[in-house]
Length: 302
Ligand SMILES: [Zn+2]
View 1 (cartoon, rainbow, N blue to C red):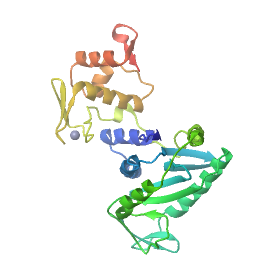
View 2: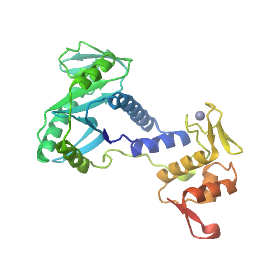
View 3: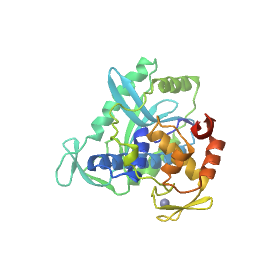
View 4: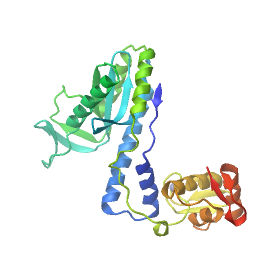
């Protein structure tokens, strides 16, 4: 059972919108692509986790803090007699394992994911103990990009490679697990401990005026869309979306980027790049949001 689903982080959601509507600086763009790739890898791994049939509690995407140390967990699975901690990496390319670390083929040392995993496990153990529980923790580093290869990796490392994923989850599924009240209490106590977004998640500076206006495609996020009657057609990927769905999605993106700006019919029309009919936009807003104020001062809230 999934106790805490995975949601796109606020920073990734914002960067995704900004990327469609402005030229991101090189560093920001790189950061965005890394986050996006990581998220894609996590979603792919979630598909395997969803297939587990034994009684387990699944918590995705957790940020905890203990004794001023923050740590993030991609997926935590509470089973009858143990806890699984999964760290997902969607890296691609060739790496070499040596001197207890990860190196590129060119010999450059990269982030040590195993140390990170160990740190995470230790902090999680402390947290669970302070909550009054004592479960053994099994941690795994999951590389699930089929384009990844690690040379010289000894078999005893807690790593699951792309070609081992199926067997890894099959084996996990073979271990019988029955849950009791105790497990649910632990899951709830852990949820109470979850922090908001990491304080390291810094956003670039952006202004309304500098963003390109228009209706983004719900599929490929391109702004090359045309409004035809009550439909939005993407010139880039061919996707057809109802005008109402497109308005709602774009309004929600607008709200995310500019929480302080009021949502008005004319504002949405402008955000849409002046396409579509004001009348239809007003109808969509009226049937999906609560209107406040009167006449031309009307604005809409959730
Ligand atoms: Zn598209």
